[in-house]
Length: 202
Image (cartoon, rainbow, N blue to C red; front, side):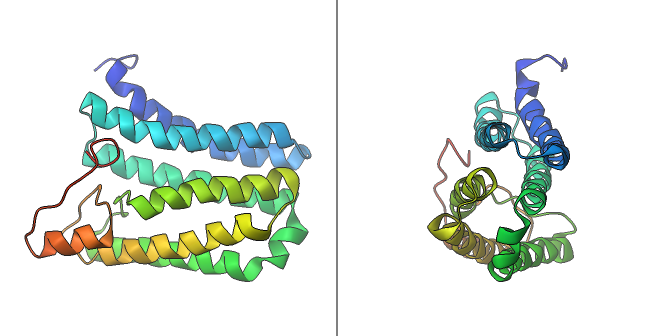
């Protein structure tokens, strides 16, 4: 498969997001750049949405590619959080408790997957997708405009809920990708059919 092949586009979008995180973090040490920060966050979110959609459309949504997508997500959003800490240290310190709770929930879900299956979770559940959107709005509001309030609270609450959902999905007997929710995982464990959205879960 050629590097310029259409089928490699999902992988390139994921790699773009993986590299964008460190670039965003590096830029934070040279002052505040709200327009660039907002552009980078939006570009990261859109690449996260479309890499999966295109991978399924082109028939290249392999386990390896979806796992790579999950790792890129983790690196990108951790870099966004670190950037926010550099640019808005007082605001981050003020909300250290809720932010730590979300990081703890993230750590618990990844640790559960690694301990059970030896690989990172890659369920790409519906709650996780809502969480990604809320991370964009919450961190964009804080990083670019110094705003917290409901934007950040929504991201925190959805982050905890999404990771609880992920841990429940990981009760499956074997590693699986693209499971829409813990309810769908429960049906899989019982040998019942599940319906996946063709746009988001193949």
